[in-house]
Length: 68
Image (tube, rainbow, N blue to C red):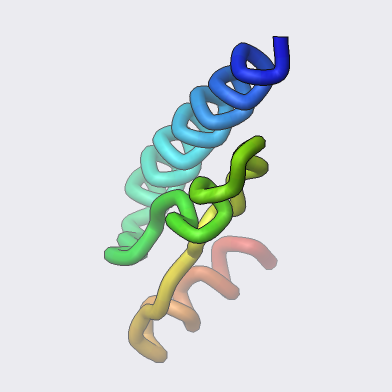
């Protein structure tokens, strides 16, 4: 049961990253390092974290503008 729950958590996190990537793309924003944090996946019972990564100052400005 625990393995199924963990697998579901990872699948859900992967789908969320895809949705976020698509939403950002629609706003003209790309976060090159966007993905799942590998360290959070290495646990016995993975609890994925989303790694937003690094971006340029211009990308950060555009992201802030979209969020406003």
